[in-house]
Amino acid sequence: MTGTRPQPRHTMQKEAVRGALEATPGFVSAQDLHQQLSAAGTRIGLATVYRQLGALAANGEADTIPVASGLLYRACEPGSHHHHLICENCGKAVEIDLPSEEWIRAAASEHGYTITRHVMEIFGLCPDCASS
Image 1 (cartoon, one colour):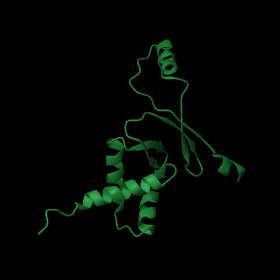
Image 2: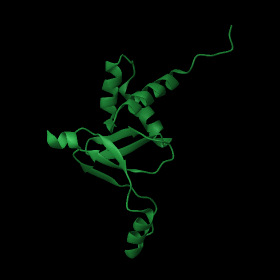
Image 3: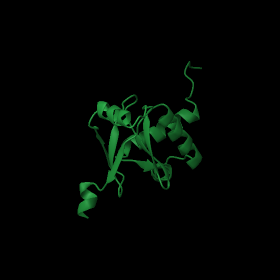
Image 4: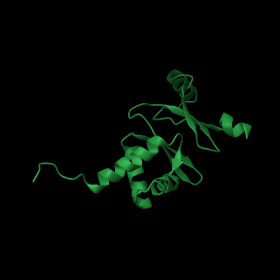
C-alpha cells in the first residue's frame, strides 16, 4: 500500500470548473460553462458547477456580475481589485482602471456618502461584435 490517497471527487470537480473558467476569455454563465465541460467529456452536474463557481467567487478566484438571467463568472487573480469593460454580445471582457480611488471617495463625500464598497462594470460591444 502506498502513502498517497486519491483526491476527493469534489477537488477534481473544482479543478475541472476552475480550468474551464480560466480557458473562457470572458464572462460566462454556469449553464454555458456546464455545457462546455459536458462537451469536453467531463461528467459533472449543473448544481455542482454552480456550487464550485460560488466557492471560487467566495475565495476571490472568480469575478461575478449580475445580469438579467442571473450571475456571470470570470476567472480572476485572487486579491486583485479591478473593473471590466464587457461585451454585451459575446461576453468578452477586459480589465480597466477607473480614474482613481480618490475620485470615488471625493464623489461620495460631495454627496455625504461613506464608501463601504464599489462595483464598476461598463458594458458595450467589443470591436469584433461591433463590426458584425
